[in-house]
Length: 119
Image (tube, rainbow, N blue to C red):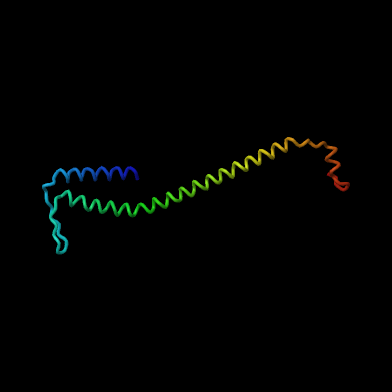
């Protein structure tokens, strides 16, 4: 898409340069009963400007929606990262307390088993 925009901008600049270097050429446009006779630069610049405004009006809402979604996603990622850090801290604390516990011997295990427990 960036390549397309670059090509479109290059074409627009070339057309604009040709039009503005030849201001003495008048073009007559007829539409129904109206007739307009203006220099070629104005005939090219006005529709280009109108198209630019209409194009931007169609593109900007999509950009705004994507920007809002990106902000929402960034906020959610931050919350999830905080939650992950807390969970990792809890795991580390549990690992530390597990290391502090004395290891059970086979006799202590046998004592915990009831008289009916064979295994």
